[in-house]
Length: 210
Ligand SMILES: C[S@@+](CC[C@H](N)C(=O)[O-])C[C@H]1O[C@@H](n2cnc3c(N)ncnc32)[C@H](O)[C@@H]1O
Image (cartoon, rainbow, N blue to C red; front, side, top):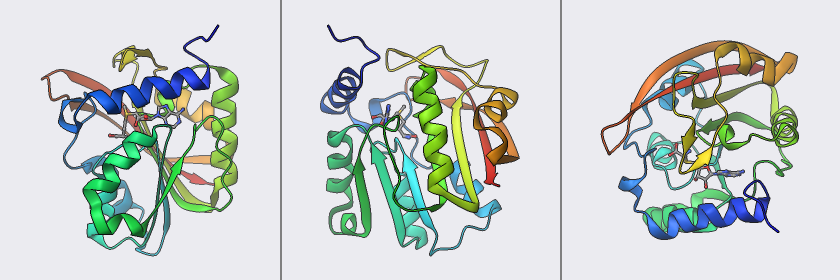
């Protein structure tokens, strides 16, 4: 029997979300990913940088990256439907982006990225072996000197998202999780206001790959 932690069930959960909810209806919706854009600016990430958004869903981050002139952007998500939706929105511009349908807990990068971003996908990994695989992928997939920016619910945030259990992080637990291959540069605790008017406390950590 399948359990919620098995990848097929995880995938069907997310396909169902993107088949049934509109972009503006989901709790994680944000028209402009201000926090992520400010990390890009703080780290002076050049327009030629190889960027990947892990669990990007159909968020507006990719639109903003293309508007800014970034030329080497990849979006990875477990849901094919999520990526179809953002491709339809981007129309012709979708050809400028690499689209990867994959479970982040299984993903094996075949190139090194300069900037690896994850907002509210990593925290769905609760199984220690999935978390360890993700950290290994990030280690392999980010060039030395490149950046990792991960945003998750904080210890003051919700315990679930989209009906699924999540793992909360603090600055210390994030540092412990990513280990000595990543050097913490910044951390930022902030509230996200959902379209339904709730507040969710997030922590974003920015690292340099050592
Ligand atoms: C809460 S949404 C956040 C979407 C986007 N990052 C944003 O900030 O709007 C979580 C996203 O992660 C994706 N996701 C969840 N688990 C995943 C996994 N194991 N591998 C890849 N993507 C995953 C979901 O399909 C969904 O698009």
